[in-house]
Amino acid sequence: DAGITQSPRHKVTETGTPVTLRCHQTENHRYMYWYRQDPGHGLRLIHYSYGVKDTDKGEVSDGYSVSRSKTEDFLLTLESATSSQTSVYFCAISGGYSGQREQYFGPGTRLTVT
Amino acid sequence: KQEVTQIPAALSVPEGENLVLNCSFTDSAIYNLQWFRQDPGKGLTSLLLIQSSQREQTSGRLNASLDKSSGRSTLYIAASQPGDSATYLCAVESTSGTYKYIFGTGTRLKVLA
Image 1 (cartoon, each protein chain N blue to C red):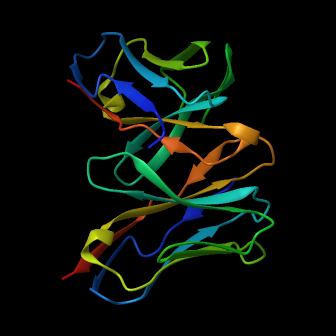
Image 2 (image 1 turned 45 degrees about the vertical axis):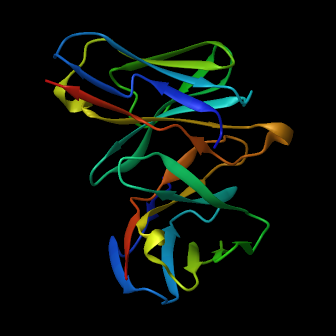
Image 3 (image 1 turned 30 degrees about the vertical axis):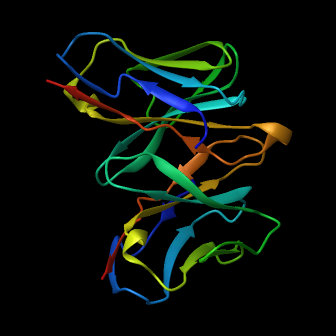
């Protein structure tokens, strides 16, 4: 398995509270991604990063922000959590040696917003 | 806008059967296509990646093919086993150089012992 960890693995929070999810990689891959997975929708891209301090929006970015201050860490923040953000969140990486394009995924974070 | 479809959504087969999973995409201008496996409650595991210049890739009992002109990829699993039971997802990188992927919703496979 690629060295990708996510924390926390499970979180329950209340509507309106801020939440930060962390993705940490030990593979020195250039690209990092945050997806959410919901029944009937599959995986949808929230934000991705193509380098330190370089990020871009995905298809479902409203209500989320990200930061990448170093190669190994990519943070996803829900500024004010809503029930619609209850989901399983996955981090992924790609762009390792020779720019290889294969994506590798972390174990996921299950977030419940009550 | 690229759309990726996987039909059927669920499939049950007896152990030992050879089977084919399908992935269709609407825009043939893809850079590559990747197949994943996901076990319940787990993350995605990469199975095979096919670059746009390739026709197929093989890994063990798995063979993935790509036909860009028809917008299709298939994942062939030979001699299926109960351990192959999982959800299989395909993802396409739609525009050259972006490293961004669009995912299908997956096919949930159950191999019966």
